[in-house]
Image 1 (cartoon, one colour):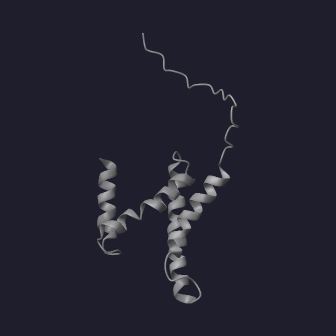
Image 2 (image 1 turned 60 degrees about the horizontal axis):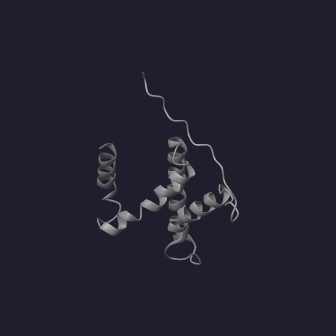
Image 3 (image 1 turned 120 degrees about the horizontal axis):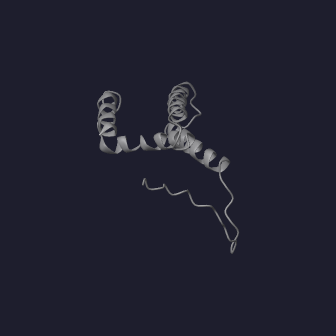
Length: 115
């Protein structure tokens, strides 16, 4: 319920900035995914900081597009979260096991029933 309230509030606050077109709101998923990946899907503070940094970089590239005519007219701000996703996934990657290699990992401990 909290996420629905936050999403609804965000939609209300963002409506004056962007047109109320359904497909434009789906594009907000990519920067949010990039921030969540930077936070490792566990650290909310890092994810919020990454989200703010992504927003600032996107705003700066939008401003730079107006100042320099040689920059592409569209898609530059949307490229930032995509590049961030690719870089983080490449840097944090673990090598895949070789073909035929036996991988033994310990399972998590099961909780003991009370009693």
